[in-house]
Image 1 (cartoon, rainbow, N blue to C red):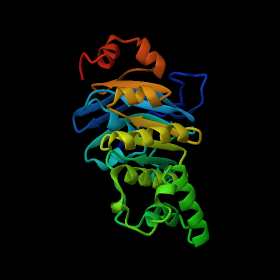
Image 2: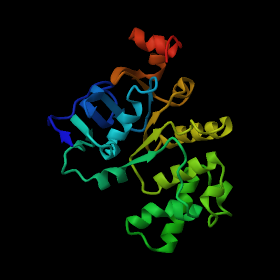
Image 3: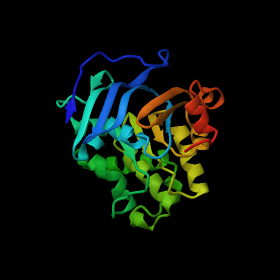
Image 4: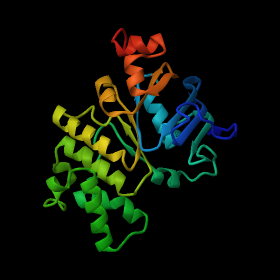
Length: 267
């Protein structure tokens, strides 16, 4: 259930760069508990935005609001605006199905379907009405190549995706997301369940994908945020304390709470 205060999109920071998503005065409550407080942030086009902060600070709630998955939780109340390409996605008339086609999601734990590798990636295009096998073959191959896993699975396409390693399963989930050609990819701690080698592969993949997509990644790993993101947003107790270029946030944060967090004084 949303309470809208319709205004025009604003440029809350980085006005020189193009924003694909603009968040304006976003507040969210779970029942009586306020989880997000007056969030203002732009998600920049073809950039990686890292969301950092301690557990329970609102990171995952925030990105699940961007594709309205948070509305699946009972007793959620929203107030404010999220503009995607100029349209307010919190407007009840805005199609959730259309939104989730344009704004894809990769979760913390790999969650392939109990199907073959091929069927995992072809699932979205089939839902959208693509039935020609040749076209589906092309989409599956391109998506797997773009997810940097084609060479590892090209001879196993009809095997169950559950037979892959955790890191491979996560890249299959990324390929499944890419197959519906989103504009924005949301990643909720996508490497937290992976080993270091798999983590490195996903990080390298994220840096390549930003050439085509705009990416928001929630991470508990500040070194990861520093390695792969262009801008970093620090959340604390439901507030957006600071957002700026990643190099600025890590070398010269404006807020002492940010400095205390990134230097390990708390969290």
